[in-house]
Length: 81
Image 1 (cartoon, rainbow, N blue to C red):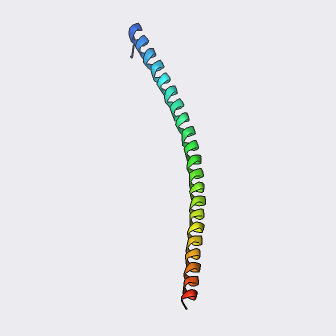
Image 2 (cartoon, rainbow, N blue to C red):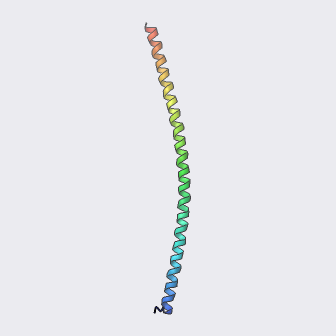
């Protein structure tokens, strides 16, 4: 039969309490990590949306420049003819 001496029982109790405290700490760390992950996903989503807007603005800007140069080129050709 298994028999714990009083000193061993105290050590087992301490180890159990330490393990429970460590589990509690790890659960808290996991909770914070999940919260941070949610915030980072939201930030990433916002940055992706901002990037789409910037790319669209850049595309419009490039199109405007191309059109401007095409118009200048057409005007130059008309003057030349």
